Image (tube, rainbow, N blue to C red; front, side, top):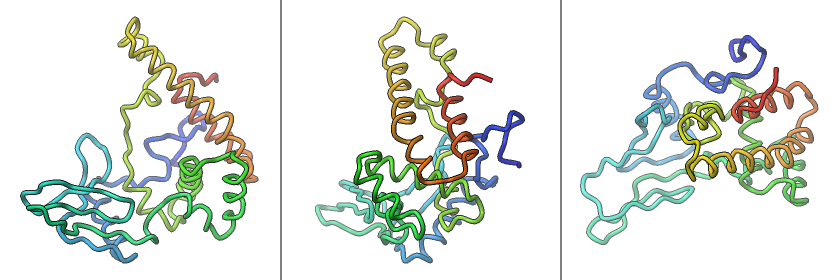
Amino acid sequence: SSFTSSRGVLDPAEDACAGDSDDARARRIRRWLELHGAYFAKCDLKAAPHDAGVSVFYEGGEKDHVSLSPAKLSVKLRGKEQMLMLTPDAAVVNAQTACQHPTLGGTFRELLRDGTLDERLATMCFLMLERRKGEESVWKEYIDALPRNYDTPLYVSNEELDRELKGTNLHAAAMAQKEDIKKVFDGRIRPAMRTLTVEVSFVVSWSARIEIQLGRYEY
């Protein structure tokens, strides 16, 4: 598969993502959103700086304040609120989206009910499942618009952290964050994904991917 490295582990930079530019993905996600009923008044979707995916850019000139909710982007101009962008529920990914999945919705609801997942983790698991589908996912354009690169400690190796931050308070904080993320993955995401899919290889590949990012994977 073109989405796997030579060691058989999913490549985070390529996994089920389109290979074109962020500008092209921005145009596609806008068309996709409009097909789902989104409304763009005084903003547009464009490539964000530093390979950070697709972002919303205000195109209305001067402004007093911009506010963002999951479905509505608005701006205050001379004290008066004006609509910039409206996104319908059909184009929003959240825990409710996961719970409405045609085959796994009931499982997501049970995992939320028993505390294995919270709303944030349910959304993450849903996106992992959909991302793995690649071209077959109805959320492909949404997923393709997400950032490819991150500058959080999870995406920096332990060796790099030691080299750049050893002896500082930031080093300890970064290592603690990585350990906390690993605990969440092992204690909550891994069991949830085992419940959500019967394909053991799928769980193993995601486990390897996370552990590689944590700098703890052993070949």
